[in-house]
Length: 101
Image (tube, rainbow, N blue to C red):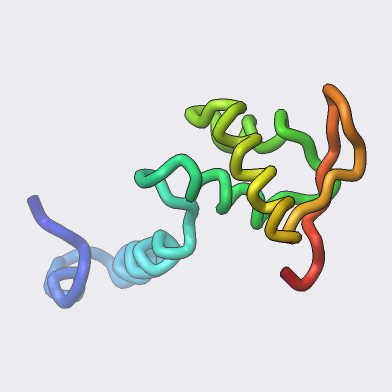
């Protein structure tokens, strides 16, 4: 199987615009959310990119393969670290990211 990494891409007979697009996609792939790895890391990534205020259901929509218990565990850990605050309690609890942490 041919890989599009490294100098092989320039050696192919693809149009220059396609080569450029594939190189940019490969570079952007490093900035995307992790596809494999621990579920905690997926939740951490989702929390870093949430728009406040948000609830557990919002995080669950971004991480459908992660259980609510895992999401709750990560959120409570971040709250104890001072990086997240609960602004509404109860069934529809709302959370805010703390600035500067």
